[in-house]
Image (cartoon, rainbow over all chains, first blue to last red):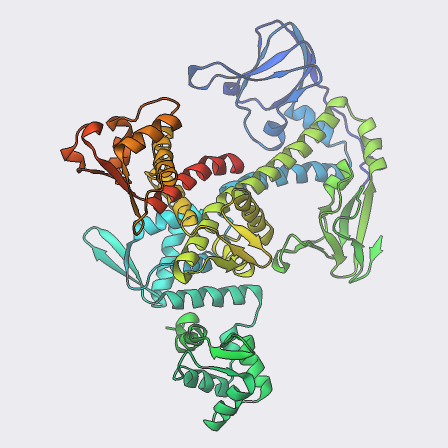
Length: 303
Length: 309
């Protein structure tokens, strides 16, 4: 671990260059560190026939680190603007130096270099891990029954998430297999129809709960609670009552419910609290749960 | 050093000046910035705390032993001793690599924020449209951003702060409220149009067009012109007077107003084909609130680009 077995180090090359001398050209393909000891160097971008000075180097400055450690080609030409003295560290010289450092220092250098590369790659990749969940969430915001051109949707969704079109295509097939969407040809154009946008919202929520290790709410419902939900759809949405009245009403209709079960239904959002401790049925939430239960096999992919 | 299962080595944010090497066992790195499933495991050979060693940066993780483990701490004094034996360029190289890593990390953070903006506007505008309400709960927005774009809560909060600075929305405790229901959908559409068509959205107006519309609004407000439904009609003479003030003496011509007529943002009476010159035009009519929204969009749009970049 302490790297005491020192090996022979290949010394760096020192040289003096005249003003105008090209120290490094991108065409050379060389990978080396250039250290300016005296004088001045400039980094010039010569792409497209232009001559654009990117930066000036002063004694002590160094270039080429990324090309050696991160295999990232150095894009600029390095020229001397005045007579200068430089030190060149070749790949072999660097390697011999690295063989003489402790493993922990080598690991630190490598870690910095690897992390830089990973950060750069991540900046160009989609941040989305569960692409199917993301697509389900997107489609949940489309209007049910309306035909949308798949090409336009793919482009928009790709712009929103950077998920590659090939992955989007595969995920669309997955939604199609579960009968959440329909695809049809309209001339040359492929059209997508969302059968029931709420079902896609449910699917997205289901995948989210699975991914986060949460209990998915519709699965918390017991059989008597499910019967209560079905019954609640027959009640006028405007009816408002206090909790004991709701409990009494449901019990009178042979739907046994105690306080604990009432609290569970309230937790699940089946009732909305109004003024003066009165509650009314949240029909949208009830529809959500009943739809989830009805399409359970589609959600699990067992269709 | 031996660490027993469940023992903590340090907490996130603690002052750090050493590198940790895992010799055997397994450590887990937890962070408030990360959700549980993104906690990092460090097995044998892993190193933790490069920037604590090099730059005395606070600890990135709370580090706990997931099983009985053996670790080695490398202190800054050991690094110093090693660097003293090396040529000067070696230290410069090390500093360069550390700096480069910081830049790449910062760029990644910025790019994630920039990239997440359309997703936030998409979700917000769809919610406003479907619910008809002027607000969404922060918890719902956080969850939806995570589901759609894997955007961490802290990144969503940064975006909301940015939009709040531009007066597009207001975060009031657990609720995100918009003062104007139209701006977020308009902004989303302008960005979407630009991204998908590789050209500027027709809603993004030139300075002259904005000046004409500003004159239109001033003409209505300063002359007490009645708004019927959403429509308002401004006589040409009044518009010309207001335009002269707004355009610093510049004159309103048929040519200056033509793009707004073509885009159907304003309508001329008599209709365009029948009144080829401005003097033949009696008045101009527009949806007043749409004009206000367009001017607001055009105020925000360039600022948003600047803020994000």
